[in-house]
Image (cartoon, rainbow, N blue to C red):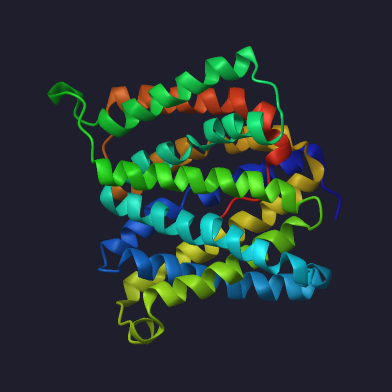
Length: 302
């Protein structure tokens, strides 16, 4: 199959749109009485099984890792898989899809600052402009829902959202290191598989086996696993083979816009003009930053 640049861009947009479905679908599962741990664990378990089948059929060489890298992969998965997804889905439950996705998009700022110290990257004027822009945007989105009453915050939910951002930053920074040795397929497959094991342990295997969810709850959990996990993952991998990482990551910067729009349509989540301005500031800041941190880009998780 010949993939042109235009096709690659289209595939990246598809991937971003699919990743943006994770929050709204999770919220719909919560409304059917699914818990945070059930959504996180079952979505990862289903996603792992599907990815394992795809990689086993189409890219068998990506099934292997070196013994010396088992412990690093476990550490990577605990932060970038278990912590990220529990914090992500927990923040959605505590706040809203719009607030969570924008708080999560503070991670490029974290990656930028960490890269100055870890990879000796230059702290440019562009970065100096983007960092406060992103921070201010997050503040407006998190607290500007009822601006006429003043800024108000759900600190626990915001803490979870920022924890997901920290875990995402670790994902990019550590993933950058793994990409020196392994393909994106290997990295994401082992991230999913190892994270699933620990999520099952956290959820308690006995209690998980007793899970009794409605058909509607299962439907939305399957949607989280399939659309944001698999259908988001596969086209992004194809696109990244044919695009410069910086260009692909700039396309990915529209994910908050997709997520907020989906939350408005599917969940009737309201958003104030102040929050709209905050979303715009975050997206602008991310575009400024991601052109500089592109070398750290790997495939995004659920």
